[in-house]
Image (cartoon, rainbow, N blue to C red; front, side):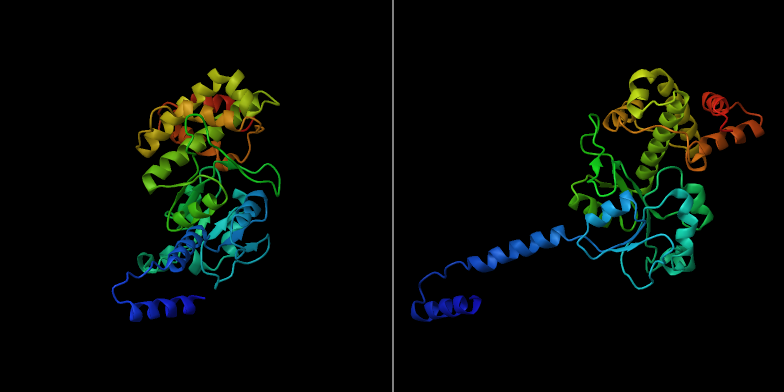
Length: 313
């Protein structure tokens, strides 16, 4: 069809030189469709973890992803990001099953070829663990979306204070991750390291504060904590935020409590439990221990009191 169109146009030019050439509509429409297809293409990825989040991310892809389950190894020759969606306590095993050339930037002079491909989706404070593995600048994602059951579509954590969404990504593969999430109908913004660290700490404060207060009131969901125990969680948020700001030398954006409570309303059905201490409340407790060892006041006295009340420490 395209050949016939070109021939007809050529004949028209030879017979009527003064006649304007008609627009080639077919070629224009083809270019628009090609551009649109390219915009929705999702970069293939290795997805480590076949749980709710891992399966959801796979469902957002273009069918070219490789799902790596427990006990399997990450291939050396599969180009693209490695999306790590396991439990925090499984991270050591993930590294052991991943070729070091895919994750250790320090094995290459300033990572000249940018070979670090790991992208961590875990909640909590990963910094000490990442630093211990030489992965201080590893890609990370703050996933403010929820997958209730395996196979169900994810629910975006958009709130009345942040209707644009709170999910954020940082690092080499941040744009690719954002593109995947956008293809799945979810929000995701790409941040630099400083902005990402602030948001990471905010989410750490949220999960540490709401889970601890909820544990003091058995059966309370995140929504119940926000609605019925607001004064308790507000006091704890303020305490943890102050300690984190001093430790990291940062200033949080105003309105943190409102943002965190708004998120709690958006995921009000979430159960509460004081778990994964090492990755959550443990970081704040380490600040308390360090201060006391130096003869200084505990920066998180309420937090410490409630941890002891629940016999967590």
